[in-house]
Amino acid sequence: EYRRQRQMCIRDRNYDVNTLPESRTGKEIKYGYKIFEETYKILGKNSLEFSIVGNSLSCTNCHLNGGTQPFAMPLIGVDKRFPQYRGREDVIGSLEDRINGCFERSMNGSRLKNDSNEMIAIVSYINWLGRYVKSNEVIAGKGLKQIDYPNRKVDLAKGEIVFNRVCVECHAADGQGQKSDQFTYLYPPLWGPNSYNNGAGMTRVLTAAMFIKYNMPQGTTFDLPSLTDEEAYDVAGYIN
Image (tube, rainbow, N blue to C red):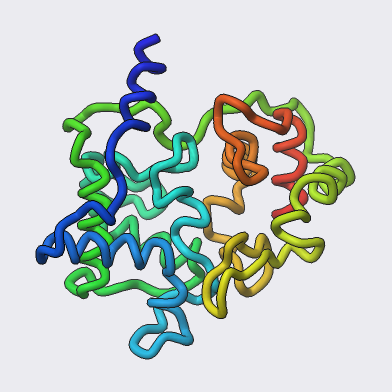
């Protein structure tokens, strides 16, 4: 009951950047949100100033709804968890380090300078999202929601059936998604040069399965999933 009430509280909070004033801080946060939504357009290889992003993805393709959707790796309160030990690198890392990890792997790109206007804006946006969260507070909807994995290997044939039944409507039969404009994907590519590389978290079948189960297809929420645990597991394996 507490978790339900806490989740309702989070959903009721204001995360609309359009309500921010046109102050220096307000503009900085809005720019961070814009980068989050249009990452490739601003930081990609076709932009005028940058070539940080190596594929065609945006941050919001994985951190859904601007990083506010429960159990879609939301960024609300993430700022309170840094500095943080990172087992992958075996170091104590900053929030900027974690963001750059996403740029290098999920975005198949390179690091953004910590003192750049763009990194400062992204961090400001994440800090703004976490303004209601206290230090050491664990919010409901953090990270990804666990599923019961079947005690077997991925069944690729079953995964393909799920993909053709559920995923092709948005991501297309070739898995290359649908663009909303020249630069930005409404539904991102799931494999190939415009998708994440093999160092990204989504290449871990168990991680991808949790994300898919409680967020896919489009419009799914954690409290009303469309797929079974086995379907999410198999289609995650098929995609990867």
